[in-house]
Length: 109
Image (cartoon, rainbow, N blue to C red; front, side, top):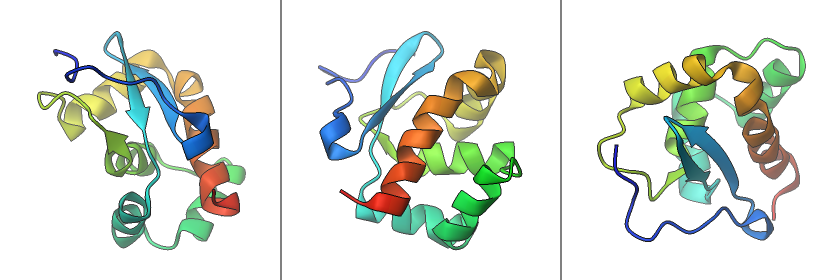
């Protein structure tokens, strides 16, 4: 997988988070459009936050949220490859990015 042209680091002031996928650091940006798309697929975001807090967030939900919040990712990275990378990297490695996105859902920017 080749990186996006001139990828910028995640900007926490913008609510962005970074995640390592297949050896690359990629940016997650929880924009309004991204969160609306995630909500259309996953249901209400507050319910998603509650499931995550209860330890009941499914791997498919995690991958879907990350997929909808992707920003300037390599075109070759598919959603299936993202899911495989999340499993290969371990869910603990994805937790900081998940927390950052969920904070944005709850607090806004």
